[in-house]
Length: 413
Image (tube, rainbow, N blue to C red; front, side, top):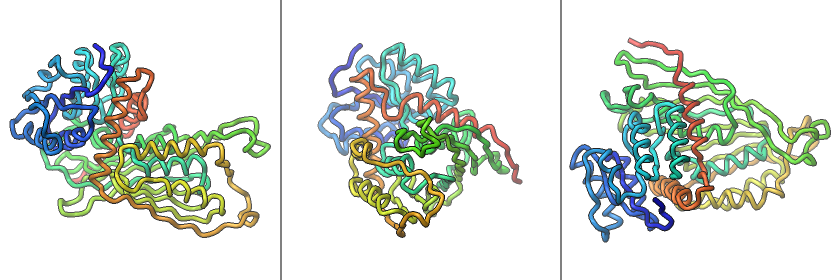
């Protein structure tokens, strides 16, 4: 089977609220056409179809299936999007690949990194595009922070933390069943581990913790991860004593906290804080929307940060992250590596503060999902393209989540 030209015929297996969101985002892309939906109830299937038809009303009525396996075996489907509970990801994606389908999996992609890796190998053998729906790196603020960290525009990073406070999930939901969800770090935390690895490097040491409530639910989990960052620089930019190597290994301790404890009418919050030698970076929002930077910076550092933030699109765009990456690549040769100075008195520094906000949370969420869809489209058309967030990334994120889930626990009640 070969699919060289869009539109690609899509089947969505799993018909919950998130599937409806994906269908609405998909409807705006001419590269794809929703062909079928699988869900256990008529109501859920109709909810997904309604989200699609609201924006794409002039297409043939998509087929409806009760079972995901029926949809996967439909010969008229090119791409399967799996938005089922995590414990079904590995088996259903394997079936889809064996049926010759391209596959986009909702995170985490499997309950274990070994299972996800096995299916990644199968996708290579089948010559099919296969990706996990990890979307945060498609946000332009996430890419802007990575560029500032990589080029030490606030000096070296010494510590970072993520605090994620979410609404309580209803008791009895599959989310609380570790056999179905894998737990918070696996079902949810992989998004943030992907950002952490992107910003700070690969994990060197991990410790995970959890509090188990009387109900058996673990609504609060946290982990301490030591990331190893390799700062790559040109030899001519290094101090003389370091010129023998073009990589500086540095360790960054990062704390990750997730709490599904907020009452329904309480505001959720997600906040990264990155503490550097010359200041801090704060990124807020599960869908990142507010970036705040403060520090004591040189004039050149301030100019570099301003130039970066000035090109970040403030209205939702699927190519927003790509725009930041393209700008960064064009400026790479002009960015000077600035090793930490031993005496601040040698350099004139000024107080720097700046905030950048992206309005329209829902619009940005859709734009990030669309960017992932378009990345999959490129993977289908170009076998040499592995995606912005690769399968190796998804496997590494899940492996880190597994390490954090093997945790020390405290029992309440």
